[in-house]
Length: 355
Image (tube, rainbow, N blue to C red; front, side, top):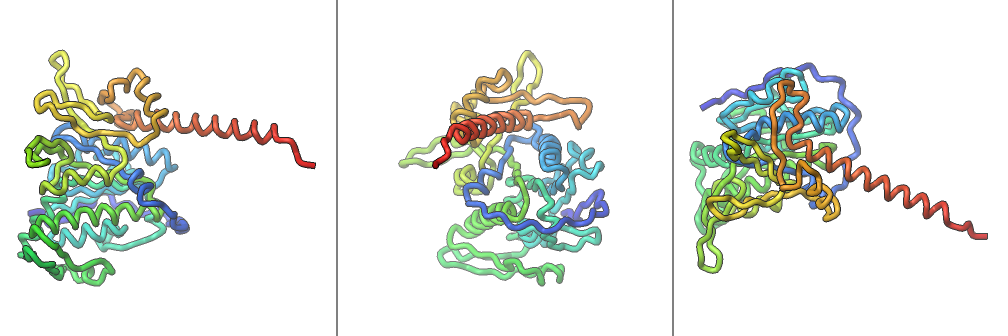
């Protein structure tokens, strides 16, 4: 088991900006600013994180990008962005105190150059994007942590277990130091833990962070409805009670898939629900927007089929990936706002001053 944190290119930080005044965001606004990319292994999820980081870095005039991975496959597809200093990346897969480290990260802590977890409100406010990869691996890590620490949850009663950190610094952090579950033993604990951590990450959006992005593998399982069993497609997580409840916690849902076209493998990013040709069930996907903007996107020649084809460019900095869709949406929203402002000016200009 890998117990070492990987912190490549921990560059000397620039002077911290003045802390921003906390934003007052509704729960729905936080959800809208949380997106998820999901798909089976090899569909380009990590590669897309590089394009997303570049998009947010540009849109926020150079705010920092945090990348947290629990996957064991590495981050080679985004290595150029890490080497350039655009992305600060850490790998916590296999950490002996995984659950406490993950909780600290979800509350805005980050590793300083010495490897110590610190919480700096100014630096958090200067963070444009936090990427968490992936939900599937997080679930596996949490269950592995439960087993390794020999945590037991009562089947019928609320059970509380105190976490014992191997690192004394973690014990002193003002974060929740216990785990609990009310039923279904460890899977109930896993469900509550995952949902609570997603909620904690979303709270950071009220502290200056602009966007959250999670990734996940996909899953196809069985669900029972009115006594009947049917195939269910969606985000990959451990436990039948988790996957169906995940979509409501995200805004944009992008499903990455591959298909063979003319004997060539084509990478696609779906933003509309689409049917699996073999399972005859729909994979969920969506963009959060009003019907008018959605109609305009579907009228675009590249997006009219509910997906866009992902291409590779020799120059990583020229690759837009799924953000080509986001950039077009930004243009539509900007144009709509300009039209509203123009109409407001006409109304104000035509108003007759009262005597």
